[in-house]
Length: 500
Image (cartoon, rainbow, N blue to C red; front, side, top):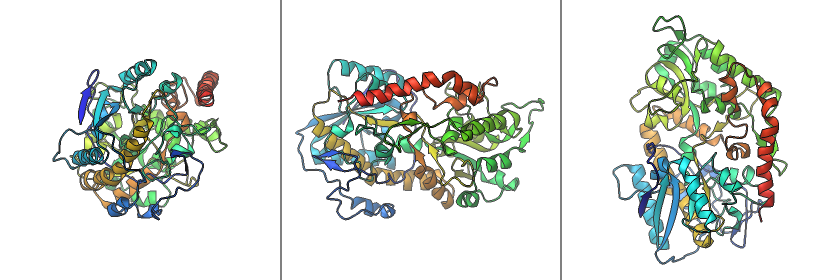
């Protein structure tokens, strides 16, 4: 196994946590290729009960249905973001159990198929230029790309990517693939960016809410886990519990970073996450074609509510000018919570190990629903997560298909349980109820076609732009941007339709 760093070394994201089942998705196979037509696959070994996938031994019983093959020492090169590199390649056995599981997974695959893994990593802002250069040269310089979710659409528009349905041995009907690959990311039998279990970042970047259990008890906020379980964790309830909790710590007479709040939210992605948690989508695929469905009375009301909560509610705070400890304009809620300056904060699941390891008594709950009538809690996965893609000029699609499939299968079977049982259950949570909450968070993940192909030209980040600008309302912003955004999404749809 080899590792090559490329470009500037970015912020190293501590390997974290968790897991949930990648729900078995609809999709068949034809001539060794995924078809996505809902046909059940043969050779499932009779093991088709997702409710039993919690057991490590049960997971091992699910066959990958891959052929025996000897790739005669070939190198399988992966390209990934620097901050996610340890999800993919670990050079030697480690005392860290998660890293050890990644190492063992790779060694098993290397021995089984006589391949050698190599990784080239970039800061995400430099990665696409490398991929585009390889594509234009017609050079298969690597086998598998772990692209940045929101930015990967540029590679589709530049004709760099191959349709996954052309790659043999990819079986989207297996539990190590997200069902979104069929339901939300496939159009006209084509998918260019997909999510599999080997994309661990699609788990630990899930948006959620942390709260200080000691402070919640002192303010007599009730049993929050019971509220969630009853389906009553709504935007109204979040506001009700937090709006009056405020202490002007520095006696400045105004709200600022030195004060204490009921809820603190980062002014960027944490605000955008409410769009999905409250039951909205940018694009709906139920008709078989991507359709823009964002604008509704609910989305207008939600945007107005959040704006009022952030800037006209004493106990709820955000600050568009905040800059975190690494120089990025993110992490406000996380940092305030870590410093004991709020009861609740919005952040992502990886905060449990990366930032909150020294906090003794916290709970984890999903983002709220719009109202009690909404069926499920829904989770936005942060836009920095990985998606899988293959160069259109790739030649050895047989090796790419087999090794990608086995990487996802073995991650699901051997790495994810270690994340869940060791990293998360033992170190990342403080009670068994929190484990159940994490299952709700991960099971509710949304992969919206309109988000994945946003490229910063769509609607995915409109909430943060509107809420942080006192001059804007949803209707004003929508009227100003709708033609431009519709053209952008139509260009994506056209590219899918033009591909052959």
